[in-house]
Image (cartoon, rainbow, N blue to C red; front, side, top):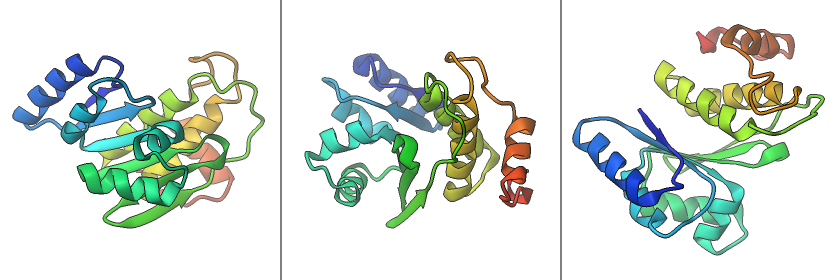
Length: 175
């Protein structure tokens, strides 16, 4: 899977086209719309956006409408929008999936989105269903937020699984 961030759309389009021509899936960490972003979206299989990206794309501040519009326009295999402290919401096969965030002692959110995307990609590679990917990614992001800095506190797999187990989440599905 090729993970891109869309900050250089012209180059990202080239990379995404190459990936598709060679049977490689593409995931976009979409935060802002730039010139060329809309031309990139047809090459995206897994689309994880910020709420700002979603609302800017649709031109409407309604989450359900905006998800439906973005999905209908490009039909990604997975479409998820992160909502910060309000969790995340996904739209897959016309089903809306909401996952709340985990309540932790937040000291710094730097890198929270990046680790969410990395964990999301990990879940895709493991073949988990979308809800489980969102839960796992939210846990990784929450754990990271308990430490200062973008890299400090990024949890490993075992730490994340232990956290999920401690709060009562069934962990068998995360193997």
